[in-house]
Image 1 (cartoon, one colour):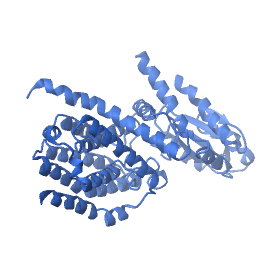
Image 2 (cartoon, helix red, strand yellow):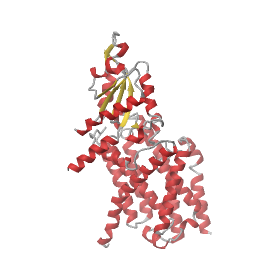
Image 3 (tube, chains in turn yellow, brown):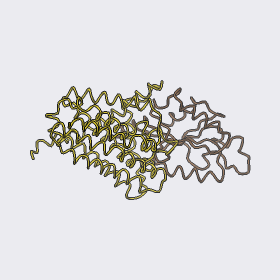
Image 4 (tube, one colour):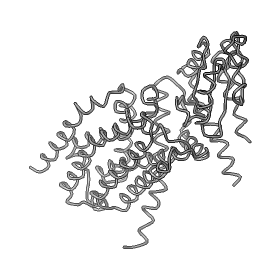
Length: 282
Length: 143
């Protein structure tokens, strides 16, 4: 492998959290404006993160920092792999491992809030993982390539043939980024119900690591979205529209329960994706 | 190194996650604290978020007077807040014990049990006074 090519994933690993943090900042600002408030500065997530890194490290047990670090590493590795133009199926397994470490980290502590959040996080994974694999299958069906670099080179406007799949991917984004109505495993506003769900027992630098990992995951999912319109201006428009949609969905819908998600989203969502896939095949 | 330190102080000043704990009393201070968190005062513009979780907390707002039972709860909560932390006593009861001061079970204000950084007087203090109290404690992070 050509070593000179390594600067692309290296740049992605540095740029992705900046991008994810900015998205979080814009989200908070726009959400505040929609609620008639002035809102925090756009750079607020970075202040929060830097402050958390400077707090005393209080770990509940020796496993908790390890799982937080592995979650961050998994998320960063996923971004690097996609930026390298790697295989989408490997990416799928990488994302699954990443979520696994988050769930393990939340389950290795005695807090019932954290464990309930971990259970819900697993249920969320159960809902979006089949859709994610169907999205990658559809990308292969359309372009004949499993590697992201090949898809980007010859993809064109995938969105034109896969509107239903993109809708499913959008819902995956809503679930994965824990936006309302699916913000039940850990929501910044959920302290009345589960305190902070999976994040409850993390504090200081370990919480910062998990937050940083979440920004990587945000960037990763938006990079997958960008594959659906393989040109720089096209993907920029697509990602901007998707983020705007996310913010509006987050503000428009009240929180639903995980039972509602399992009953009404779990089977219909992959069904819708499969319908699109069958349409591509015939 | 100086820049990193400067950035850290700036981040700490601009990102305060708060938790409020009522030790007992009439709950008037809690209502005023909650009022300060409404969109009308919009504490998030200062980076202040209500967390309800001591592990994520930077500022603890204490209301009510301390007795022999709740002092343990208060100590337990403060032990779970990672340093650096700010402790703000809100209202007359948390300052001195208030009208409960002479009662047989009351130890007094919050400063009898923990090191209080800022005192916000009033019975109850207005939301503006609560916000002012939190923000005037920020200089502690300069050290």
